[in-house]
Amino acid sequence: MQKYNSEKLKAISDNIRIDIIKSLSEAGSGHTGGSLGITDIFTVLYFNVLNHDPGNPEWEDRDRVILSIGHVAPVLYSTLAHAGYFPKEELKTLRKLGSRLQGHPGKEHGLSGIELSAGSLGQGLSVSVGLAISAKMDNKNHRVYSIHGDGELQEGAIWEAAMSAAHYRLDNLTAVIDRNCVQIDGKTSDVMELEPLADKWKSFGWNVIECNGHDHAELIKAFKDAKTFKDKPSVIIAKTIMGKGVKEIEDNYRWHGKAPNKEEAERFIKQILKK
Ligand SMILES: [Mg+2]
Image (tube, rainbow, N blue to C red; front, side, top):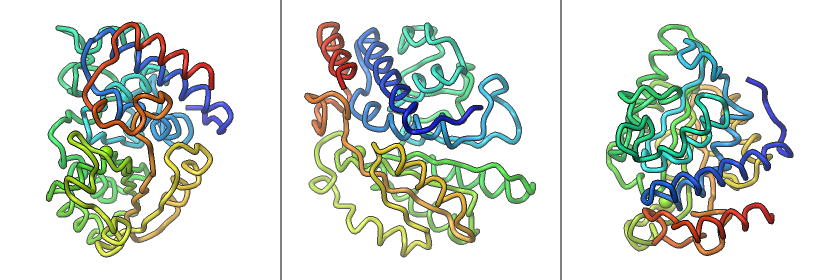
C-alpha cells in the first residue's frame, strides 16, 4: 500500500477521528477517549509504516498489528475502513446486533484486517511474541506491532511476555505504549504507578524509544528506528493525550467508556474540522 508523508497524514487522522465520533454516537456506547488519543499512532502505522495490502488482507508476508487493548476498537475499525479493508458505510453498524464491528474486535465476525480477538487486557504481547518467534523460525521478514495501553501494563502477563521477547532477541517485534497517563478509574499514578517506565522496559532487555504520540514525523522516525535496531525488541513509549482533538474529552478519564450524543458529536466534529 502507498505510504503517505506527514502532511497528508494530518488530513487522514482528522477523517479517522471524525468517523470514530460518528460511529460511537450512532452506537450510543463505546470507548471514545482512548480511540481519539491513539488515532495518530494508527494513522502513521497504517498509512506510512506497515507493509500490508487491504485488497489481500491474508497476504502471508504482511506486517501484523496486534491490538491488545480491544476496547479502542473504534479507532481500529475507522482506520481499517479508511485504508480500504471494508466500506466506510459499515462503520455505522458499530456495536449493532449482527454487525461485524462489535464493541471489541472478534475474528469470528469475519471482518478483514482483524488479527486478534481482544478485550481481556494483558494478553496481546504474548500473542505478538509467538507471532514474532514463528516469523523468525520461518525466515520471514514481516514485522509484528503490538499495541498497548499504559494502564494495561499493570497486568503481570505483560512482563512475562516482555521477558520472553528479550530472551529470544525478537528484533522483529515493536510494542507501542499509548502513554496517556490515565486509565478507566483515573490517573495511572493514582491507581498503580508505572514510572520509571522507560527504565522498566530497559531492565527487561528492550530497546526503548520515547516520542510524542501525536507528532506524525516523530512517530515515523520512531517506527523506523525500531525497525533498524538489531538483537532486541523495541518499545515505543508514545506520549499521548486521551481524547486528543476534542477539548472537553482531552485528559478526562470520564470519557474512557462513554459515547457522545448526537449534539456532542456535531460539536466535536466541528472542532476537529476547525484545526
Ligand atoms: Mg491509558
